[in-house]
Image 1 (spheres, helix red, strand yellow):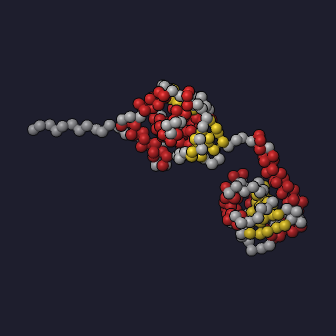
Image 2 (tube, helix red, strand yellow):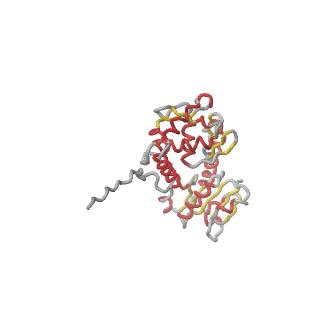
Length: 281
């Protein structure tokens, strides 16, 4: 006998939401259609969301439940008309017509539970969520990075840049390649944006690990798992490239890119126009 949790805003018994439930020996509990009710709710074997009347609310609730780390099968109860609107990005494991029979309901519950158990049993072959490169550990799921246990305070682009380099240790990327892979095809800023972010990353990695991002002169950057492989001169090209007014302009562009304030499309600052002297009378 399974423990079934039904989330609905309808002031009706569970047998009216899904009549087939009344014909099965499962234990059913009805709660309001809110994600907060799962905080103190005992673990159930399956969660059913009532989407018969409020499709938009049901979609939002399913997506919200997925973000909370729901481990039980999530099934959506719909009418015939609602079937035309449901999509994979709603986050439900399966859908049920409110007129389905008890045999179909029981089978769908078993199949949904089996699909969730399979990845857990095959966990050893699942792709890891952590990237380890030397002393750097990157957690893709948590969007966090550590160096010898020390948490790094990175912006989104800094994290993506560090992750991309660490995923390919030793491989050299040109600035143009990094712009394409990390910033995307629709980014119109200059390649010096990469230099700015590398400089920030090196500063946050600290003096002991700043050489983890090595510079290949006249080419680009690479991730070095061992600091001994990156010579002390690795940072010279970067520092030389980031001095003067151009560096300040690119730093401002990069900052705008992180803040979402238009760094991607802002034109570089040009020289001020020189006003001609007035002719003598």
